[in-house]
Image 1 (cartoon, protein in one colour):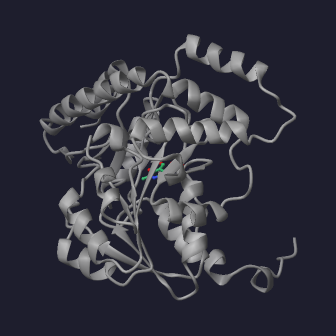
Image 2 (cartoon, rainbow, N blue to C red; image 1 turned 90 degrees about the vertical axis):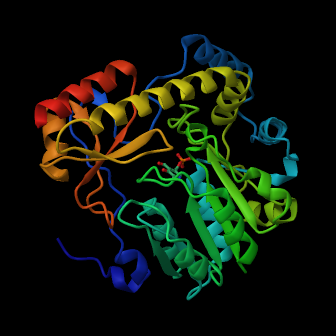
Length: 354
Ligand SMILES: Cc1ncc(COP(=O)(O)O)c(C=O)c1O
């Protein structure tokens, strides 16, 4: 096979990037992508399908997009003009990187953090400045304040992935106050922390908050996320998204879910209880280290190291995430909190591994 002259066609920053891949194996229990462990109740799926049957499939989804914006805005006590919706929060983050970063500009983020931020920055030929977390995965406040000050774009995952750690809202306020550029707080896991930077929006026009339907809302299969910001800024961010990016099925599903927020709340509360119990029980096992988490996942280290832990758990049919290639995570795996039964199986499997 002849090698294509890719250097002639593709940006060097893209060629240098590893593909975004998630290590997989056959599984019975899936705890590797921070999804909701339970699918939607049948009645709600039936409701989505009913509404979809009635929807016009031949029309561009203009009205439904607007209706969804209004519903989201109502729930958050902001105006619809402040909301931008994407195919997953990833798409909104991509639009933000696209409209803000020029070659040589600085994107500031944490390390370790969600790998997509770096990919997006590099594809815009930006410089990625990362503020390293401490060995306990806590933020170095001075370093972050220093790096974010002059960055064109700062993206902070709160709670952070893959660590589950939480930045204090006061610190976020300080970062936003002194930043010359935009600051994005990615609140993909906010339903499990209960801590949001949303109240800061009134004070700061350079703050953007992103959220997703993929985690607590259990809708990863439909791809939907959104951002909240100052309305003038939202107008510009919308330009970074292609027209009619939100398809009718995703918007209809989201509308139905937003009418049943109590289910989301109950499930998130169960996940929080399960997370705290699981972390406490695993932490009592000899040789095991687990870190506190404000998300629906946590980090775990065993004396076997990350790869052997991953393989052992995979042999028992439990798929977790080997994050040992993330800086500072050399010995750890990331585990999503599952159903009570799945969590019990995980606990037994970790105990057997020792
Ligand atoms: C911190 C963080 N932000 C964003 C996303 C992407 O979410 P979405 O499915 O909305 O694109 C993820 C997914 O794992 C995540 O962990």
